[in-house]
Image 1 (cartoon, rainbow, N blue to C red):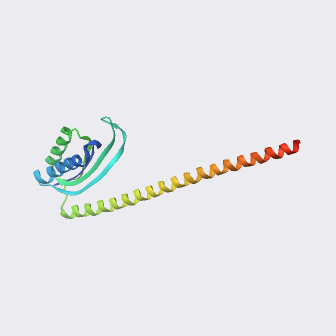
Image 2 (cartoon, one colour):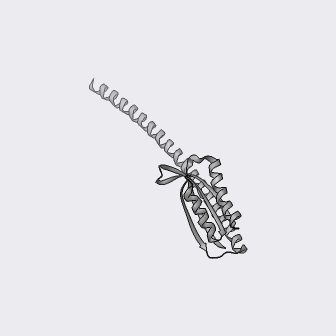
Image 3 (cartoon, rainbow, N blue to C red):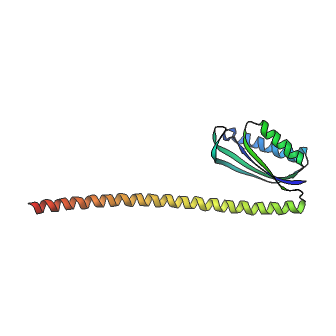
Length: 165
């Protein structure tokens, strides 16, 4: 069997049931009909698209890594072309053949990649939260500076009035 990966973008208005239906149909085609093996399935989730696709600005992404014959890929892509809920898909052949040991090594590699992505996303979220806090602090200190300046201006005007008398 050959080693493939497919990334697919679905319409966000399908809902969880629609996402699950498309994913199960895809994995069922690979495993049931053609006797392939799913190595990894990752529901990446709702993301903003870089540009509008079929009048959609967001899409639900999922990633499927599998070993199957070439006919399975042709059938999966045929189903994607028919389904209106699929915005885009891309299938890449990673290797001409893969065995059980190769599948296990790929599972471990993908788990490491997933853990690194989760850590990166958490760090980005924390950094964003900190930058929001800094902006709030800066805007608050700017308000204090403005108030201090206004008080100083008031004192300067009072001193100028006294000097004029």
